[in-house]
Length: 140
Image (cartoon, rainbow, N blue to C red; front, top):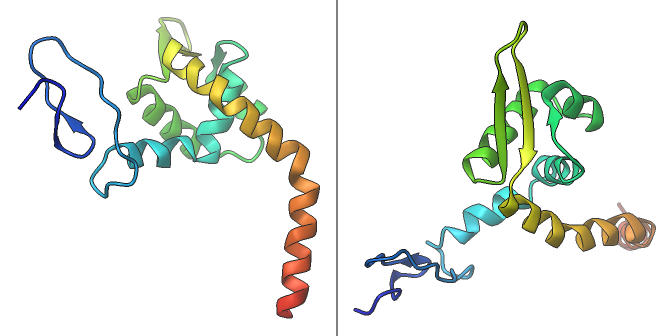
């Protein structure tokens, strides 16, 4: 088997220097699907877009992102930190100060998400009309 070939879809072999290979999102066991679940999550998207504007502390993030609970904010931050999309910096103070910042990997994702957010914000009225038309046709 050659370096970089797949043992199964989405799982590259590592021989010598690590090579990054493209996954196969259509393969049932490809880890890309887990990543898509994460980046399709509204809290992940909102956090990344917000942190793309600059580092922020936890409470500032909570105030900026309407409707997110403290538990969901903490959970999502942990997940995207684990994924390498944000960093968490703890400053020894009383009380302890924690700042979150986007990583270069996360910034690349923010760049990709920008057009999607723009599309959603500018097309929501069209989607609402389509939903209403669909609901009326079905008698809902």
